[in-house]
Length: 571
Image (cartoon, rainbow, N blue to C red; front, side):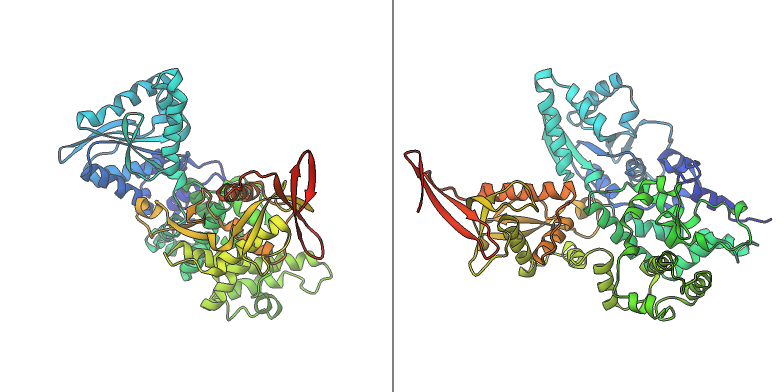
């Protein structure tokens, strides 16, 4: 049977590991593929690096990060921007380019070099600026740090490594002296990459890449072509959810690499099917809202869940959350006002195979979860309803967090107040009363309140604020500016970011929702915040006086005590 677009479908399948044929998941082989240029997302980091080489003084530029962060692709984009005629040879690891008298040595993958060669080459490269020459190195973080340390005497080795680690951590892309060398460090792992998925989706569903499918004899029953066409009907809805999902994951400690995102999106389209495997049967289980979460129909697919990004999506199970749209979507079954005609037809056909009147809740709930998955990706709801959806799918603070993440508006008191109330509850078990001070106490663990606590000081509510800090992401990646929140005490910024999980936790605590078993990452953040707040409080000179807080059901009581002559007395 004629399968005119089989090459492209095979290429998509080669980007994921579902069938263990993911040869194009790696930059070298992918770049050599004829489809690569049509699907490559040009990222701002490449323009930023090109600009450094063309406009700045000679320096060493290091692009570090995890395997799969897209570092090699960025290097090739830089090469193309500097010299579009340069013939890239993917098998060559070290090469030179001269543009307008600017000489630059490129190392495609520093980690490929033997350990002895790493030390020798890095030492040579770091001397280039003094010889009026640039160097651009792509390196996985671990080997880079260890090799840099090896350039120094043993007693200075750890200090050198720590200085490089700090440069990687801050990753501002600015040229700075590090142990006598002029280096610019950009760490991919610290840069937000949520922008990537909407742009990549737009590329892989582009009509030019799917034109051949229109002449295929299987087009009327092909689930791959159907997935593409369904996405193309309402791409903004799919793109918005994808971007929000990857932001949510990153905020909760799971930052996926570009390679993992590509793997998930390619699988979401094909479900691992090839053109030759498609038969004229009911293929409803291969709908993309299911595949994204590692589901074939209503059932989890163990092979799909081996992919990191799919596993991460599955673990969140947004579709199990109760939503305000449930009344319209599930109770009334008002599909026509929420979905396109094609989706309505698909849903109704699947609905016929489900016994919604059965006494068994499981079958009904599986169908209801499916409805929510389709809704999450492809709804036609109003703008107001979508605001509610963000709260229901993610969290109550998510919409507000996104809004303030994207602009430099001042933080309103409605965000500050729940944090102060939550801190008061952490310390004392109750919200801030009529006063304007929060007793800061010593207690063992967040969420476990002690009935007697030692008061170390008081936090004046007027001394507490939230500062918005512009990240380096927008400048380096040439995207819109991104702002993060940091608490301040007495106008001094604390060294802890108020992440979305922290804001959600404080909001829930302020509303009386007590979590006794919280995530270790979140718990560490809370304890870190408490330590830093305590360090900013003024300490009274020791006079033998101290204060205890007695936590009671009918109200807390402060007890002032004095120790003298080995005796404790109540003041």
